[in-house]
Image (cartoon, rainbow, N blue to C red; front, side, top):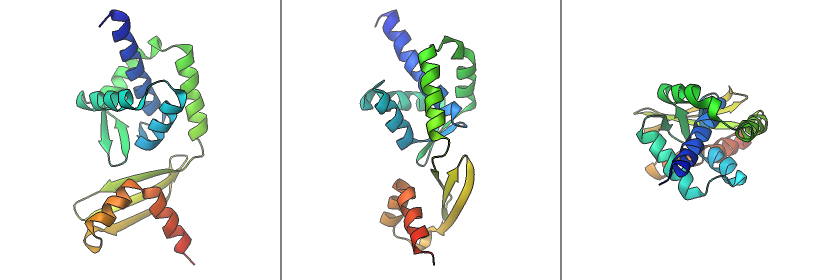
Amino acid sequence: MTNNDAFALAKDKLFLLKLIESNDGTIEIKTLQQFVLELERLNYFYLMQFLQELEKTELIQKKGTFIEITQHGIDAVNLFTKNMTPEDVKQIEAFQEKQKNQPQYLVEETVTQLQIQKRIQKQPVLTISLEKHGYSPETLENIRKHPQYFLEKWEESLP
């Protein structure tokens, strides 16, 4: 691997960290995938590999359907942000604008409960807590994977 290749890989990882950090330090995995793939910056397999490497080095951590930047990740962003190109900064600003009014869905879990939360502009607008013992493992897994669908159906069922 040449120095240019290593620099390009590091630059892409820094871009991912900055993208997560700029979104209040947390982002839905699906949203991150969609944005990065739309940019055609990375293909799906590189993106997944980079996220796995960032998690292994404890710069990010997965929490349900979300990725959260760690303090080590924030420190790396702070150290290397000056190395970002104007194009990188422009793409991140475009992402922030696009995300501003988009709802986000957060799934958190304890031993006995599954909590699903809908946020708009980072503010909770709906939170539902489910007792896990009342649902089959398959249903709980579907809720974890598709919290938006679950909450939309729940809202539709309200009188």
